[in-house]
Image (cartoon, rainbow, N blue to C red; front, side):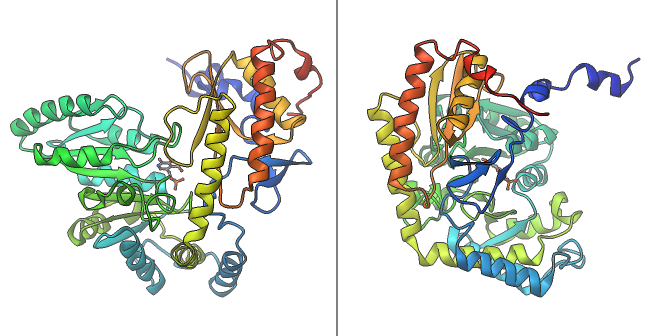
Length: 419
Ligand SMILES: Cc1ncc(COP(=O)(O)O)c(C=O)c1O
């Protein structure tokens, strides 16, 4: 028999085992100052490409005022319970109504975190007779929802419609035996690669297969579609999405999430989603803050246009400079490079310490060994100057990486990490 604490001491997990070298720098970095493209990291101002603030609303003066006024008026305590018990308000209901009209669905339920919303909605919707079919590169909140499922699940290769059909065939056979239904879950925009889920093609499959489609559009809501209504709007198939999920953590620059669908489904979720029945509802300032952000999003399409101008400049500039950005067709911009983990860390230290750029780095075990992704998230408040500066300096680090300069310990030697 093992002592639980001894077991944990011996294995801190695939990311945790690097905590000693990474904590405070590569993991848990502290960015200081107002949320904008230039923030302080370890006392120095850096150009930041690692913020979930697509439309630049985080520091918008009207947003800051609405947040502050709501906090002064209501405090953070209100409402004082779960929605079902004592935590409902006119503001919560108004926000649900306005979100429904934004994403063109009959009704919406607000949720206190996006992650929990997905996990818990999946848990509520399916029972052990039902079958889940889902994309292999789904976000952790989908995977964790699927883990709670007591019935069968079939995974299809990422964005591979032929494989999706194969899994739907298997799911259909099984559901016919169990008497259950099929829930197909995918994403609007995949947050790591930036490619859109093939929603239109999946919706077309409904003509042949009997399933309901649940789409996590965390990165697509507010950024995609002529009105910002999401990836379904962009692809012209929003009606075919049966259950739509968005988070406040990206374009809204806030906290919380929402699920939109038919009146019956949302009523069912209100009374059956355990994460919402058994947890306190969104605090009033977040709800009032979300209403202000939604108003601005709808009133100012130019914020989305600016996001796309920066996105296009960044992505086409990187490609012209010879970078591989994969198959992104959203603002999420991954830059794929090859190198070892020490080379990746030396490169990011060089970027942060000498070139003044902060972005996220993704390496093994999140992606295969030998691959490095530098992930850039453009926003409407970045400038074309920021884009130019970044591409010039990315070209420098690429030359250094492939010239073997990050193999040596030169850069690490000059950098000391206080833990
Ligand atoms: C695709 C996707 N789904 C869900 C979430 C979870 O949302 P939240 O941060 O609101 O919990 C995220 C990340 O934030 C995400 O990228």
